[in-house]
Length: 172
Image (cartoon, rainbow, N blue to C red; front, side, top):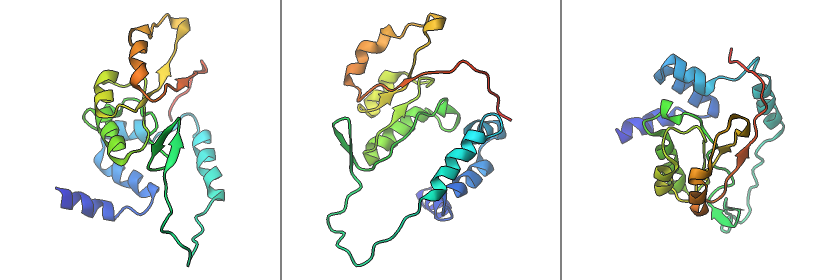
């Protein structure tokens, strides 16, 4: 199985290649949820376009023996300057998806933010990766109470707060 996975990944040369491969294996509604963008995909296109201004510029004949991709975030050192962003309903893409993502983040020593809409209890995910952060969605207007698990958050790295703009959107 590992050989088969390695062979499939050898054909992936860019991020767009992942999308093409995912389209072949995921059920259409699941792929649409993961790859889709709201409205006319304006913000999706703008996010992609802003990165077009940057390129990797190789430096040759320089000492790379002390190079590192490590980055510090909130007092913790990670192996890379990026991490796994919140992925609502990740269970659609993989069985116990948040556990899979937390295990990958822990193994690679990168940060992970768990979605507030996870289908798996925070305590279970934190057992796999105790330094995860949780995306908390405070809905004061709806009378929701997050105090049941706020005391548990002491063991977590941080708690990013998502603020929602109450406006309708639709995927097309």
